[in-house]
Length: 131
Image 1 (cartoon, one colour):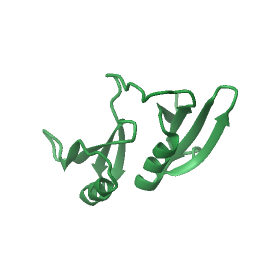
Image 2 (cartoon, one colour):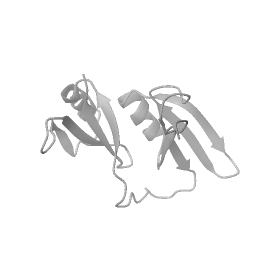
Image 3 (cartoon, one colour):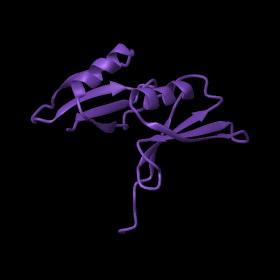
């Protein structure tokens, strides 16, 4: 079991370019690789904060023939990202038009400062203040 490691989380995205922009430009990840699969009519883009050899990353899957945004379902929770100054980060993201359904502040029944934002598809991303 000691050799097990989380590799990636896959999200289906409706507009790949908007999603890549959100995760790279706005959240500071890097586009690590992108491959088109003509036969299957889909594209995979991997984004993250470090190389896949030692970091967990996000796999953004874009199905070319998807005609409308995905139904996110009721089982999905969120992705969590640590940020150094959550108030400044949320202010910058809000200026970019990012939805912030839960503004920054202490979590209920605790002292950790969190916020929730939404990516272009409506997936929830929890921001957790880390110094």
